[in-house]
Amino acid sequence: MTEELKKWIDEAIAKDRVVIFMKGTPYFPMCGFSRAAVEILRAAGATEIAAYNVLENPELREGIKVYSNWPTLPQVYIDGKFIGGSDILRELHERGELARLIRG
Amino acid sequence: MIAVHQIERAIAEALPGAEIEVVDTRGTGDHFCARVVYPGFAGKTMVEQHRMVYASLRPWLDSGELHALALETYTPEEWEARKGSRR
Image 1: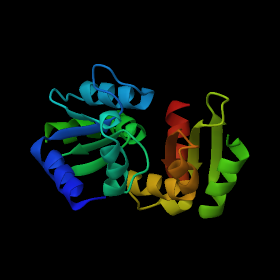
Image 2 (image 1 turned 90 degrees about the vertical axis):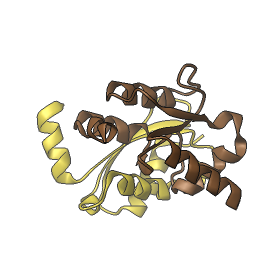
Image 3 (image 1 turned 45 degrees about the horizontal axis):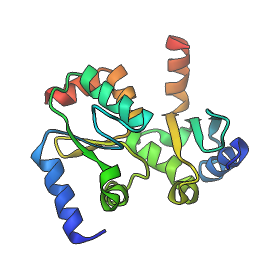
Image 4 (image 1 turned 120 degrees about the vertical axis):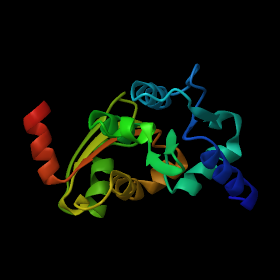
């Protein structure tokens, strides 16, 4: 991964509180897991979600996996902290912890 | 195309003593869901637990052969509690 991309991702997760790297967009998710992740974030009270479509950016699609040390997509960051993929979001939501993270 | 027993074996080798259940969700050998119950998950975050499982499947994830893996990870105690409450 290039320094430039790393810096770009650093800024992306610092700039917005709730950030998702996904396949497709919140309105047109291109993968069931990405769709689920957005739905869970919304259900937990996220109103503003900064979404980055990795299908439009092959360098980001591979780079974010290295950056997060996480081999799958989607990936969610809240307040600059890596939260995980859709399975972990669902679990956190069921425990009521996701809403707390989103409220901040 | 990956077989369920290949996934199970790879996880079992990385996490000895884990209780592993894998389902080929589409029957196409590339989308799976897995539940892994492992004493060694104790004290680790969910992110760390998932990373441990992913590490065992790295070659398939990197090659893209393993397209999707829905993952649930529990310690034996968490799994007992969950079975009792939900399933």
